[in-house]
Amino acid sequence: MRTSQLALLLIVTVAGIGCGKARDPNRPKTVPVTAVVTYQGKPVEKATVTFAGAEVRGAVGHTDDQGEVKLWTYEEADGVIPGTYEVAIRKLEVLALPDPETVSPAEYSRLSRQMNSALSGAPQHLLPKRYASEETSGLTVEVKDPGENVFAFELED
Image 1: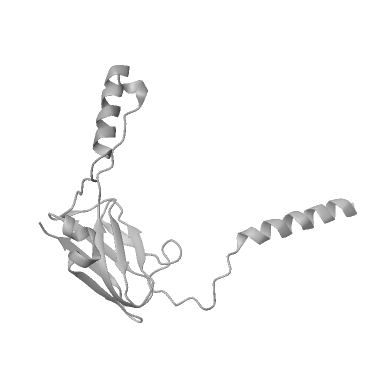
Image 2 (image 1 turned 90 degrees about the vertical axis):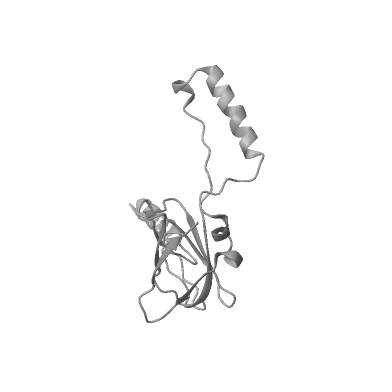
């Protein structure tokens, strides 16, 4: 009986070690930040949104199918440190081969060669290229605490 109690105590102790992450008490406070990205009047899905701060740590997030993103600094959806940020928004073409069972071996081989050729060049931007860099996007935000930090980015050609 005593052995089983010790085994249970050991299991609970080991499991508890990995369950909680201690938050660094010196880490700056973050506040919730949401952004919506549209291009040509439509939500932009699967874009990467980056907030780059000169004085504070930056933040990042990825848009959902409605073009909405919840940005994070340290861990997913934890928010952004209050401050001023330059913004970059990128969406690159993602190439994927079809399931080999759905196409002939010759077609799969042709598509594979085509993909390798495409990958050897520069990535294809699906949004105007100027938005891919904080230096050229022309987008800036100020994240406030307190305040409602919801930003809308309507990208133009």
